[in-house]
Image (tube, rainbow, N blue to C red):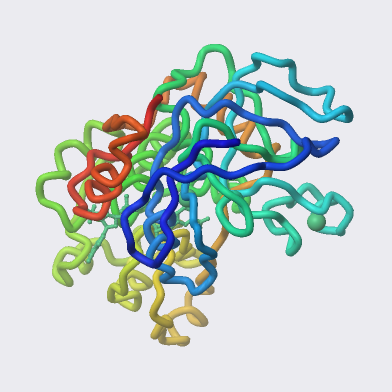
Length: 333
Ligand SMILES: NC(=O)c1ccc[n+]([C@@H]2O[C@H](COP(=O)([O-])OP(=O)(O)OC[C@H]3O[C@@H](n4cnc5c(N)ncnc54)[C@H](OP(=O)(O)O)[C@@H]3O)[C@@H](O)[C@H]2O)c1
Ligand SMILES: [Zn+2]
Ligand SMILES: [Zn+2]
């Protein structure tokens, strides 16, 4: 039996929960969970904000642990090897999208916390294709958040071929945003942090931003008119998107990774006249995760974490919900 923490109703506290994972699949690995980050998506799923949550619900998709069992067709991982697992737990591996290397866009991909149980547990299983080995030099205590938060902000740099000469802004300096500042700085970009928290401004500069602006002050947005090649939105709220589009350079892009629930109210003419784009993307492929881990190890990029024990999971979720976490809450065994 796998020992986990589950919610039985939307928004309810998590309770100890055991489940039988069944026979080992031939292509599966079983991971003994050591650390698991808490992403805002875990909180949104717990509250069924996206309408896809199945209960009992075991959150957790920023997992670092050790391979303790593997199916007979799995040869790429050794028992005892340290690995990570993120938002996806398997891909169809046959569709054109998978065959093109875009596994994270596969419409048949399995989600670690939908229709299966996640990493708030002592063990978790996944198809080996979705599991990525950790580089030896990476800090294992803080590596979990790279597997969702990290890859989500790293992938756009690959997808849009962002140059070191680019001027990039990040909206929202939380779990995703604070890793984005570090990646973008190491990538060579000029980095602006948009935050609604006065108290994060200095820390944003220390994490790699070159300047900071208030994400909710129209006057501050006006000072940035026509500046950015890329804006990464990591917030889950509605902001004045037309004011942000006015801060794009010609051919600039406003890119959403934060799951804002309200529809966007965006004027088309500024997009047409300056050939700007509005887009979104989910996490990244296993190959991109591997690239990100190597980049993080090479540049000594680490999520800034607050650690809780697994039996403090409800306290840890409340800490994330408070908005005061600096910057990612991680559960550790
Ligand atoms: N696309 C994907 O594949 C993917 C992957 C992971 C997560 N997500 C989504 O990305 C979003 C961020 O996740 P996260 O884990 O980084 O969350 P988080 O740690 O809670 O950070 C979100 C940040 O948004 C800003 N914010 C929150 N409320 C705001 C408000 N009312 N006005 C202005 N700014 C506000 C805050 O930054 P400041 O204090 O700096 O203002 C906050 O730290 C969530 O919607 C999550 O579901 C998407
Ligand atoms: Zn596929
Ligand atoms: Zn996530």
